[in-house]
Length: 603
Image (cartoon, rainbow, N blue to C red; front, side, top):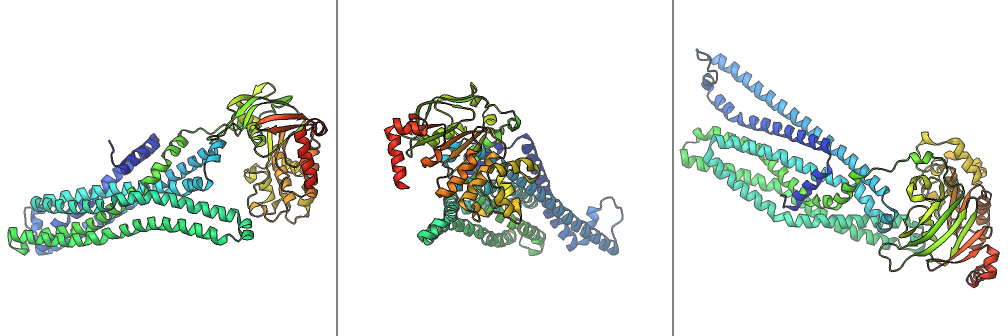
């Protein structure tokens, strides 16, 4: 059972890998084993090679099949052959290790690509409530940074530890074979001192590893908030406050990283000193044991060669153990998300091509909904029917339940009780198909720093864009005149968040986007709230031109937006307080009448 937290994280990664990934990992382990044997062979041949160089006549013992001793000239030839063979062995060893290293890195990077995509897919297909409860900066950090830490700064160091441990074990075996007593004493001393060094920093690294995650996420969040709200930040003069918040989080993040960087610099000097002292100790022990330096020179050469190879191994072992402890927090953070992502099957998109399913009526039947951790319901027993081709509006004070109703109709939320039916069938029997029949226009249109074409055909690659559908949407949104004034037409780049466009132009792009896939239902969520009266009138002309051909559902605070609706629903405290046309509500609903009078007074 894996008791150490860092090793428990390894068990989590093993469970995340599929059968093919595991076999690849086992194959890499075999390559590392072969590499370690090559390393041990390279070090083990040093002793006999030096012995032969010191006394060439020892070649006669190696060439046991020869009956006649080697001449001096033949000894020189054989020394050249052995030197070349040893050189080729080292070249071959290092080429093999280079290949093994490349395969390790390719494996890790392929897993990073795979799980990063799976994690993003998992987040994209999570319920809408998940995104209401999680900060975007945290999710970006997970997909972009923490997943890299899992594979390249946790699993890669584990592979290095495995590889270097095999090498150390193999080399230790060689030097134990050469002189068991002294070697065991030296190895015991080195192992004890190395373990003490490792234990000195283990708990601190685990702690600062978790701290790094927390402050890195806060740093990204402060960047996102400051740049996302740059207009307000400039007007309010809050640049320094945002900068201060970012700096405070980044200082803590860098403090955590500084501890890791400092600890990473210590092993080289520590083990270098240990290696020199070890060789001195070996010399002293051998002198006490044999009393003749010449006799122990080959053994000292072997230990020196072993130390030369073990020094970088010891440094890498310690540094990578530090990485494993430090970044095990990333594994713990993402494990549940990655496990869920691995099991996720993306919803089929084939329903997008299905025939429209809304031909008669949309029914909301006794809908109840309570947001997670909310003290009271957002909707209580809402029932209503919308006929195909109608234009209806939801009005009421903030928090009355208007947006919740729309989010339920959109399929972003699922009711705690009740059902939504289209032509008598629950939308939840085939939610993707229902959602493909909806065009959604929010108050704030998200525009990427791309062309008009790609912003209207949102999320589609260039080769998948239907030009006929694109221009039909542009015409229906009354955007064509504006597009024709642009030198590059639909290939004009709009700037990040559409900064080069007016408010009305941005909303018309939103309408065109909603209409691109020819939906049956058009939902406007405060779509004109930020526009001036004249611009709003122009946008509403475009919407009203679609009345009859499309079923239009509106949320509005401005009553001018919903005057032309066939029917209005006045929401209050999560319930429908009154229903009727604009004029009917003016006559029959005191609350609506007060709202209309307040709106008239404000204008």
